[in-house]
Image (cartoon, rainbow, N blue to C red; front, side, top):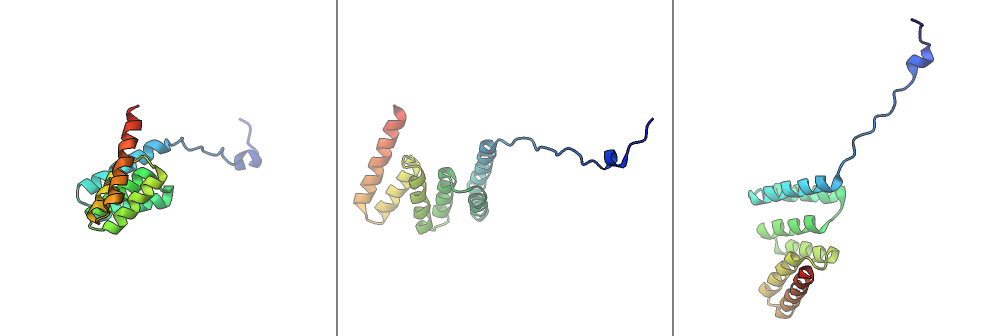
Length: 130
């Protein structure tokens, strides 16, 4: 056998390419995990994980909606309303966020806003059905 030169021995290895990650599937899995924490009553941990996800991946309507639900369940109505408003900014036809905002407006005595949110939710549902 022939001896290898130091150049052949010292040659760097080919870079390892990581396997492609299906980011949508990873995000959906993370969202389900956060939902399970919230469903189990672990609201602080659900909020912590959701906020970390927003920080790492950016805001999305489903993630902000979940943060709104967690805030509402934690008794932080102002934060819940803020999150639901952000959801409809990102997704104006998000019927669940519109429904929550309608309920919040009604509880605050703003019947005009409540009716407006309900009408928007109804129009969104009608568009989905088409």
